[in-house]
Length: 166
Image (cartoon, rainbow, N blue to C red):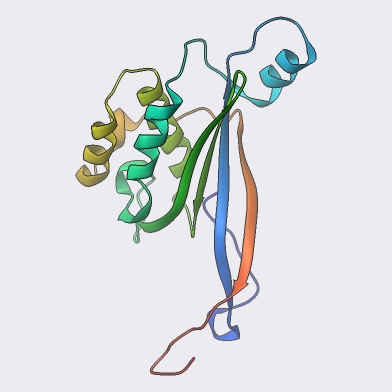
């Protein structure tokens, strides 16, 4: 999920504009179609989640940061997140992470951190502290891949400046 190859190089004027990963959690109940669908395509969480706190914690991550605490070791761990959105639809909670690139396991570690906040196990401020520490956040907690998907890749035209050229 963190690496994508494109055939267009930087001199062609096209570049990857954004990537969007999504983590979905559910607390299914009953035996209806919604419960079966959630159990197949979403990570099951059996405790109530404070989605407002999760959204506040996610907003801490928006911007250009060194995401060493939330990803695998990389020579260039600085990434830009354009948005982290947490939304609830019934028992389904969706976490959308939008950025220019992701480190290996970065979205899974962000989702794990937000779940800890949502369960009340850590404070929102702990996410900011973890980001600043550059050490594996929350003992390297990683959410399972179940419910995680690459939702969209957007290619766009950008102006490249190299020695004054565009």
